[in-house]
Length: 449
Image (cartoon, rainbow, N blue to C red; front, side, top):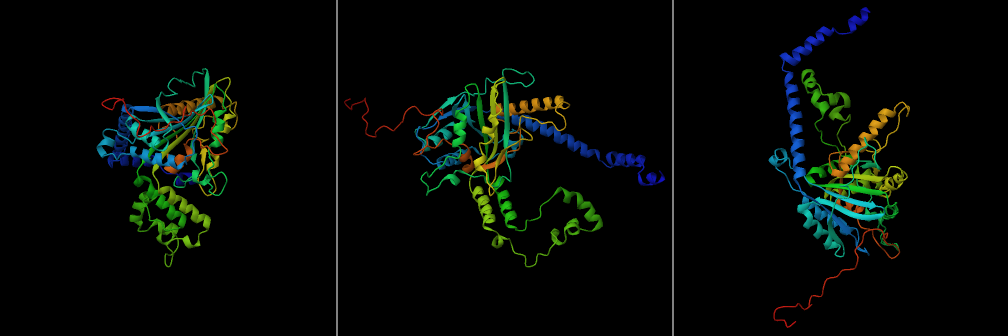
């Protein structure tokens, strides 16, 4: 016991020192700064919420052409044009007026097997979006519609007629690395030059029961080049083994007083000279010459992704059915949607089974943990359906970067070829439209007609 008394500190002294630090030596200032920060965050969230609610939003229903032989490159061009929504904000606009960058919602919805392509956009961008689609798909039909989720009310605390399943998607690797895109499914030497990577998905969406609904929602928020391309450049340096410039870190900030007092560098102590444990003499700038072809290809993929317009993105999937008829085998259809778009060399999209997945598993005993599991499941469902209905960009996982080529792969019209056609249940234009002849006579005036 005497040894313990010698080893353990005197708690009276500890409280005395804490009192001196907090009261006498102005430690309370930290609490004041913390309180000010929390109040500012509450204020900022509120004015941002008011700004978003003050915006006018419209829903557009796009009926696809019956025969779509146009390359998905056209959809990529559309997303490049829609990037015009991005507007730089001043300090006053951001932090006083609460203005944030607005976004689009791209949605593929199957209501009882009838597949529709919908867009939720800021009303002021309607002309821009319509002209972008019509310029590449003149035979398409675009009309305003209502929100298909508007009259759906779901409260997990009050079980009703319907039940839901949903999840968000995430990338398996750094978002500077791209997924497979439509260009990887184009083969110029094959008989079928274009293969639609979402063909199986469209077929599956068309075959659900009349009482079911499946929807995929892709939120895209335009982002400037300066906000994400420097990260791609750092990723390239990392992949090629180029020495990265030292960046400020929380550990370095904490070690400043100790380095000043003891006159030593923790980087040199822990890692050796220059913080990396090796001399820099005669060290090559990077490892490009010694890299394998696969490693070089990965670097090229990062550079190619950074060369196109980028969007902060969030992907959600939702399944709704009557509570007594819900078919959980639909998870396979929904979760397998983006499987063809991943590879060893590229990134992969996968459902987020840990956070937003509206399902729970017991750790030890399902019976003993049932009250907690029920509460957790209800909380997940409540949060997910709120984010989905509001098209909210803050609820759920952090957003990740997709460029216009990747978005065109995830959201495009079914492609028809010599041997393949789009499912008949996909909403299409009723008839083929064409422009009237340029020399068509016009009645009226002195023309004699």
